Length: 315
Image (tube, rainbow, N blue to C red; front, side, top):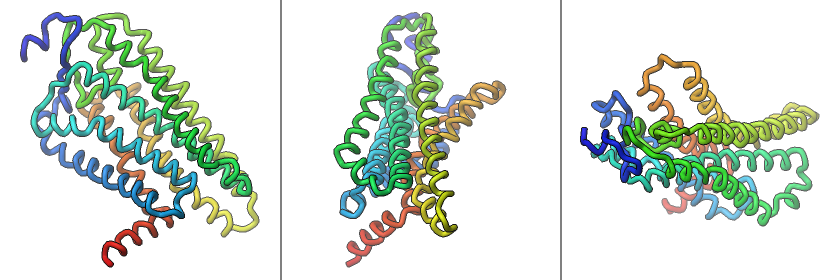
């Protein structure tokens, strides 16, 4: 290990990313599923964007929010996976201090953005099912655009203190991060200063942003289920529920792994570090990979658009 990694310093120029600690010998093999998920996520989300753009019938609020979700997923993947694969394949572990803060900001910012977009999609389903006659007047194109902008601004402002807090701390022991990308909590642990403000602010973001989003989604679906169960026939109930089935699957893919990881970090103290890191990184890739698959399989309009795309290419 070089001296720059262990000697005293207060403003490191670089950090060292370990990848998956304890599994360095298997990095090449670990990269195969990560690279596969990355390729599926990029191809799937770009396909969703292309189909919605090319199909005028899909220029509706639901698919506009789906495009926002696809863009968010692409940014999340692009912010972390290229560096992760460089570590796995090329052993390129150094990352510039400013690049680390930028990566940290984008990762946390667009994770919060994704949560906000899921809230906006829940609101869209609530209006479509509970107030169908007013859907087109409530969720106009300008309103949809403002909602998307509000989600991005909210996450940008909420996450902005993270890099500023990290930049002002001294680092006097090591600059080695036991992760394949920069996370706020991982960098904060390296600081030789009082980081309680950062810890409390991180909890505030978790409980007052992510949890509030979850509560809003739960309230929306409570009203949706009440409206569905009030329908007169079983067939009508099933058809109405199918219109929000894809969104429910995406919500579960986003929140259940997050809940599992939070419980694991809190209660599974004897679990090896490499398992914690591996699961956390898989979680980062699972929603971006699954979201286009879920909507592609469960949404008839997306399937028809995809079929038309390949039919035109064949013609």
